[in-house]
Amino acid sequence: MVTLQEYIEDLARWRGIAKERLETAKTLDAELHATELGQARKAAFDSADYARDHAALVEEQVREAALAEYARTGDLRPGPGILIKRFESLEYEPGQAKAWCIQSYPDALRYDARMFEKAARVLKPAFVEIVETMKPTIARDLSAHVGESGDP
Image (tube, rainbow, N blue to C red; front, side):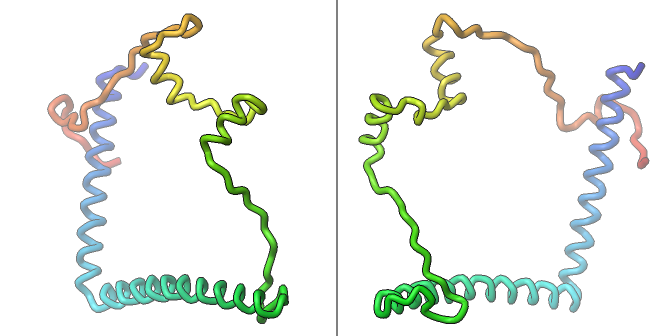
């Protein structure tokens, strides 16, 4: 059977390994960025980001132009690759909707567990039992509690 101390030592060792490997990855990343290839990589990603952002702007312009053409002609296919679809949406005041649901359609009201539990801790309804459980917290730095760590 593995003891708690053995688990602690194993956890500390793996945390150390993860930290070392992350530092190595960060060093390699910094070294890559300093090279011509790293600069080309960054430029390529920057260029792709710019193109994606610009495409989103042009897409919105296409949508606006398509709606304008539809309004002018009534054509549901105002351009190549464009189809105008009809959608319905509801417009209402949330307060009125909630009041209506309370009276006419309570199933539409949603149970919010986090909000309920916060209120239940204060209001203490009779059907709620507050149960205490124990959960261990683990120090981030376990090096003072273990021996040497090795790489697996």
